[in-house]
Amino acid sequence: MGKLATDLFELSTHILKDALQKARRKEPVDGEYLNFLHNGKPSVLDYSIEYCFDGNTYLVVNFNAEPQKIPLFHRELTFGTRTYLVCGCGNKTNALFLKLGYFACRTCQGLRYRSSAINPRSDHGMMLYMQEKRIQVITEREKLSRIMYRSRYTKPFLRWLKLANRVGFFKETVAAQNTMEMIKEYQSQKNLSRAVN
Ligand SMILES: [Zn+2]
Image 1: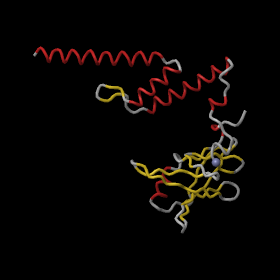
Image 2: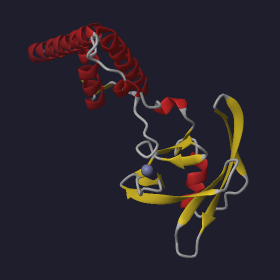
Image 3: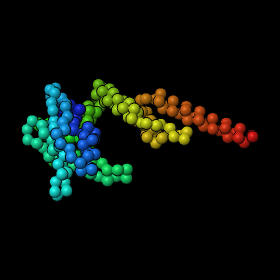
């Protein structure tokens, strides 16, 4: 079984959020550091941002050995700019993983997601697999900020509901259906009383 992604320190664009924001504005970032656990030991990684004359921007990380220069890639999106970390293989990603003192993307480090590392064909594997999926579904649900808009369920919530149903959360599906029916009934009664008046 290969190493699981969650076992390794993950240098993500999320934890580097502030530094990357400064990088987009070409502001100096120097002598910053991150504390993390590496093989169970408290470790420190320091980092800075380097702006090159050729226009490229690098995140320079220092961990025990030689500093590693990680190119940054800015992508313009309709709602703003997003910055990715570029792996040595050219992959633009949200996270690089530390293995043998070197940061690289999930594929280069040969990592798999937890649920794909479990064989769902055996009974025990299936149970673990479902459990992983359920945890994922619960986490997704916590991320949804609004589930209704103008007496209708939002698209992300409907998508979530489908997933929930797939992992056996039937209660949620039934509750959602009941709510929709109540709203419909309420609205039709309102329309009815409006028609009478
Ligand atoms: Zn890679």
